[in-house]
Image 1 (cartoon, rainbow, N blue to C red):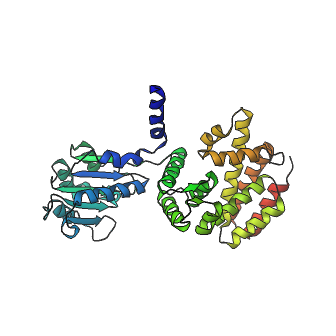
Image 2: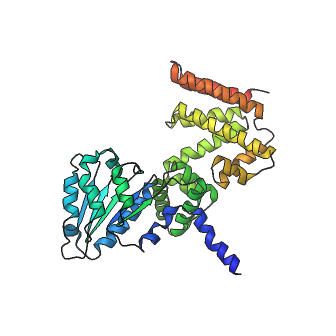
Length: 359
């Protein structure tokens, strides 16, 4: 019994991104400086908001909160230092929040000297939050000073793996009391282009859209999200292409083009589907299945299952046809980028050839 409990506790930690547990970690710390950076900036923003609220407590924000943005033209390091060294008014602490802190990577060391010194001996009555939308350069003097100081908490939200994004998306849906099928979650993920903030916003809007219901359907997602409608058309197009159904493929591609989809974008999507099909056939030849393909392609289980089913279909492209398809798409990509041609006509030619070429 003890072993099974241990396993159940470890499993979420394996799937959750490290940044998901930031708030739990930050509640255990109370230091003057916090650096929140990394590619997954949504976590940095959420943690910065929480730290700001904790730092202000019951204090009046007008007196005890200074916000700076390093991307603004009037941003000044000296003004930032003045705010950091100002004492709180009618409160235990004041908060200084610097957004777009990643731009400090471009500031010469000579202009950051006093800020670097501040990191070694910060004002204990100020909570200084550096919020970056990217990773700070580890080789720069400021980052070295932050890492070295005993008064700094550094947290980096690195890019999540596909399985971590899946788990995060499911966790966010549960938090909002939303019940969605794996297909609906995948549609939200692909419509959001992998951006966590966009996916989180979509889930929040979806929960409000379907109230008082809690179970959201694919139709709900498509109705609410304009990108989802285009994405479902893309899904169907790629499925029809894999099965070499020429008439349906041409009809769907015209729908996408009428909706504003770029020709080169469609070529890239077709290339990705051919690569997925080839990977699926290779995995199956080695005796693997959905889990193996999901790992190879870094996609979720539902997406891997769709590709496996297509690859298993007797009407699906053969390995030889897939190889010819890659050559055809490479030619199309070069032609579209280097010659004056009717792009839509060229695209239709390529798709028809992909559907009709024999071994």
